[in-house]
Image (cartoon, rainbow, N blue to C red; front, side, top):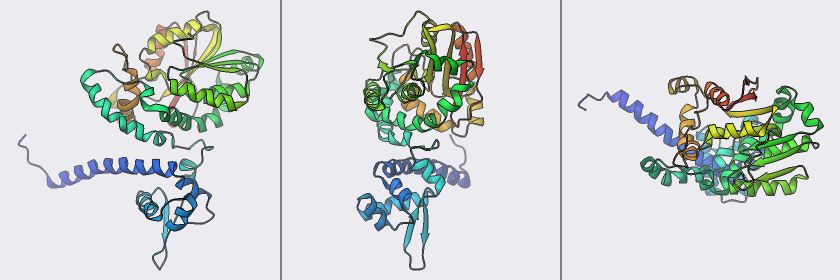
Amino acid sequence: MNETIDPDKLKQFSFLVFSKLEGAFTSGMIHLGDRLGLYAALANATHPLTTAELAEAAGLQERWVREWAHNQAAASLIGVVIDDEGVERYGLAPEAAAVLADPTNPSFGIGLFHQLPQSMAALDHVAESFRTGLGHDYDSHGIEGAIGGERGFGPWNDSFLVPTVLPLLDGLAEKLEHGASVVDIGCGAGGAVLLMAKAFPASRFRGYDISQFALDRAAENLATAGVTNATFLDPRRSPLPTDHSVDFVTTFDCIHDMTHPQAMMHSIRQALSDDGTWLLVDIKALDTFAENARKNPMASLMYGISVLSCMSSALSEADGAGLGTLGLSANTAKAMSEEAGFTRFRKLAVDHSVNAFYEIRP
């Protein structure tokens, strides 16, 4: 290439590139802020703190806390006030506390940052995937992958799944009240299963997952949940029923990760009764890259997550479908469900920043 370089465009592009690197390092600092209790200390304080006060509250060394605080304030994630003597005091706005420090708030956003070291470590083995075509399943992220998913999805589900989402499904609430058979596929650490099991004690809930780390975490959560109507299973040892005996199936953010999503939809149809309901929750996606890039401000993030996690999982077997994070648009999901024998497909009016919700019926 012998094209003349425009110096202004060169500066702009260099800034663009390094702004991405800034985001990567600041993401690491967000991980540490959560892991070290710095956000919690700021959120619990009754007034803005000096870095010495923040270090004392978190049980840490002030010099390290000071550099962390400078990163966070420069990134506009925490607030800073500097008095006339140059003393810096740091605090969290209520909105920042909701996202960074309050796991009971539906907007709590630390889940992906919790597993950030494992996601970045995936760069080592994913590089080889580009050569072989073979990805890696979710257990390659270790136990932190399961906990990160739990922390990521739990707060919103805790607030909205039972009171808001389930009542939108035609006739389901009455079934669950009277006693139904429920299966959650890709249950992860079991949060949705245990939430529903507590709300509907007359119904029976089974969570299935192929991640041993997730199943171990689900077993821990079950032991402390105080419910007796839930179990967790590995479908390779305890297969899904095939006799149309299940009344309600849920899949939360997992179909696009599967090596054989079409085969799974056929299995769901075999498990589900003729008047049953499948709640499909998956990432909001459009049919083409052009549409996703134009309309989704988080598209680049989603495609990056896909390489390190979702698509990698979906290609962890040689014949994997490889849908990827943005691979299950509404039109794709509808066509695949029809191929599996379902005849009714309805998008639910659920306001979620990332996910779309579909009611699918035989």
